[in-house]
Amino acid sequence: MPELIVHKFGGSCLKDPNSFEKTLKIIDKFREHNMVFVCSALSGLTDYLIETAEGVADHHFKVEERISAIKERHIHLINEVFSGEKEKKELMDFLDTSPQSSSSIEIS
Image (spheres, rainbow, N blue to C red):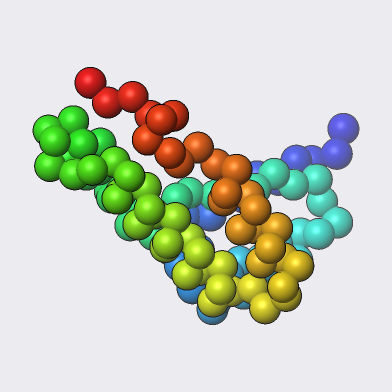
């Protein structure tokens, strides 16, 4: 059975165009192997999500505003990292299909 290589990239590997380029070079080195890639949330996003969950539960934040801020952060990164319009459109379409409306989120 061929060896399986698992790469886990932390959020700091996905923070800007330079970090994406370094990550792609690592991936390219192992192109001939069976690989699985695991990516963390963007740098700082896990803490933001925890803060959001706590703040929404305590009614300090509106969930729609927090989700919008997360989406905007991803859109900004997409525009920084990707130059091809086709790739940008595919990624934007993916973001648009992600659950993000308040009607899909129940807060008690």
